[in-house]
Amino acid sequence: MKDLKGKVSAITGAASGIGRALALNLAAEGCHVAIADVNEAGLSETADKIRSSGVRVTTHTVDVANRE
Image 1 (cartoon, rainbow, N blue to C red):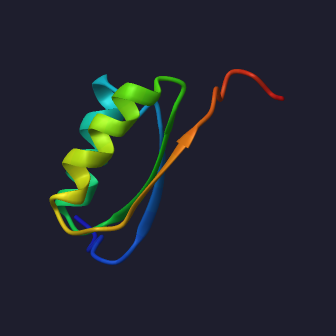
Image 2 (image 1 turned 120 degrees about the vertical axis):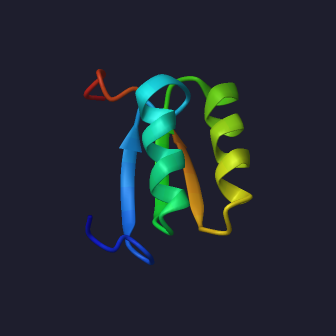
């Protein structure tokens, strides 16, 4: 696999399921993450778990299904 340490990824649907798992796995590889979801509580939980890995994380409450 490519070295992801220090890279940045943007992940939608990160409050649960596959999006959360992807965000956690990327963070474990040293990748900084920008995570987004409509579920603020779930997004916050994901961010808290990521912060313990020592990478930067930003959260964005957004509905990617809504163009506006």
